[in-house]
Length: 170
Image (tube, rainbow, N blue to C red; front, side):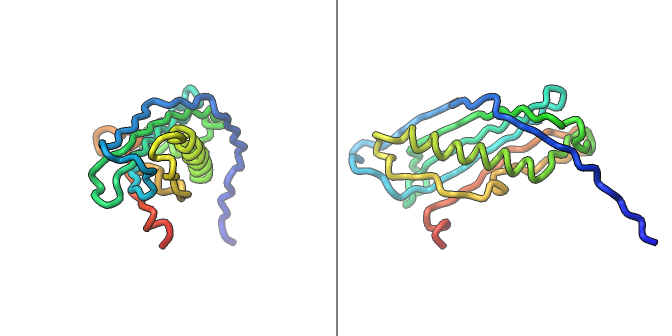
């Protein structure tokens, strides 16, 4: 007879508490008047889990670079999202760190990134960057990996993802 470990199903509810634009900058070199349509994107993300407040905070930063040089940065857009999550007390703790269920983390990051795409579109309307759109992306690529240290555990590291239009179409 095999032993079966049954996982208790816990209902987790969430809602968005805050969406805030932290930083927005457009820096286009002189002499560029036509819409820019080719770009290279860099994404930075961070996640903060506040168990005693039932909060998961996500910070997403998008940088837009010239596709050819990958050095000239045209723009920064940083957004902060705060989610109220009911059911966090049931999350597993490993070495003083909270393990958020993968599906929930993917859902929250997907919401944050999709919203960032809309804010990006709105913020760049009327600028020479109006022809650039954030690409659809797998939210898993934006989720930072936890850092484990022998002395003290840190909540989450920042994650960078770089993607260009060429990578999306191939």
